[in-house]
Amino acid sequence: MEKVLITGISGGQGRLLTRRLLSNFEVCGVDWVPWEGHPRDVNVHVVDVRKKKFEDVIRTEMPSAVVHMGFIRHFRGDAKRRHDVNVRGTKQLLDHCANYGVQRLVVLSSGYVYGAFPENPFYMDEDHPLSASRSYPEIRDLVEVDTLASAFIWKYPHIRTTVLRPVNVLGETVHSMIGQYLRLDRCPTMMGFDPLMQFVHEEDVADAIARTLEQGLQGVFNVTGPGQVPLSVAIRETGGRALSVPDFVARPVLERLFQLGLWPYPSGAFDYLKFPVTLSGKRFIEATGYRPLFGLEEIFQSIHR
Image 1 (cartoon, helix red, strand yellow):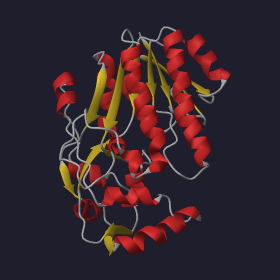
Image 2 (image 1 turned 90 degrees about the vertical axis):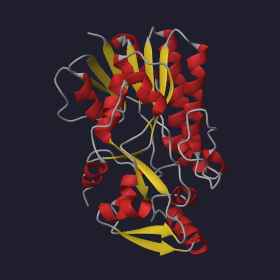
Image 3 (image 1 turned 90 degrees about the horizontal axis):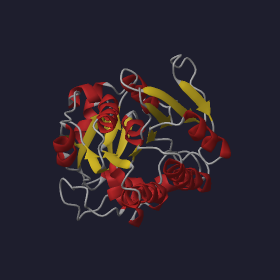
C-alpha cells in the first residue's frame, strides 16, 4: 500500500482523514501534540515541521504522498510564531517533498484567501486573485502558504501537487473560526448586511482530500458544500441569536477586546460577516465526481453548544 504522511494528524480533520484513508493507504503523521489512542497501525510523530526532526521523519518514513494541514489557524498565540510555523514550515516541507521523492502533495488552504470585499462576484473560480491580505492582514500567512504551494505545482510538475480551498468547514471535531462564531449564544452581525455563506461538512472535506489522492489530481480547486444560505439563517439554524451592531461600533470595540485577549478574531474577520465570499466548485466536481454527502441541515446540526 502507498504511504501517506499527514501533517496536523492529531487535529479533528487529521483524525477524520486518517480513518478515511486507512482502507486504501498506509498512514503516518506528525503534529505538535500527541494523538492519544491513535490506531495501532498509524505512526504518529510529535515533531515541529520547522525542525530537523521533521526532515528525519520524511527520510525514514519515505511517504509517497503528503497531506499538509498542520497550520496554526487561530489567533491565540504570538503572531510571529504563527507566521513562522505556517510560512517557513510550509517552505521547508515543500523542499523535503522535492528532495525525498514524494510523488503527490495535497495542501489544505481555505476559501478565506480570496478576501471579503463588496465587489466580489458570486461563485468565484480558482483564477480569482487572492486578495485577503488587503483588508485582513492577520491571515497573510495563509495567502503566502497558498501562493507557495501554487508555485510549487509549476516548479515541480512531476510531483502531482493539489491546493484545495474549501468553503466554511463545520463539524463536531474541527475547530474552525466560523464554528466558534456560530457556537456563540449571541452572534454579532453587521447592521444592514446579511451575506450569503457556504458551508461544507468536515467529513466531506476528508472525502475531498481522499479523492484527490486516489485520483492523482493536480492543480488548484475550490471545494464547496451543498449550497448557500444568508448568515442570519445559519445563526438561527445553529441555535444562536443575531445581535445586529453598526460597523462603526462593533469594529473598534471588538478589535480592542481582541487585543486584550477577550475576543478570538481581529477586526479584519468582520468583513466576512458583511460581504459574500461564495465559490464555484465546478472544477473539482468535474475532475473527481465529488458530491457532498451532508446537507445543510446535517451540517448545522453538527454544531454542539
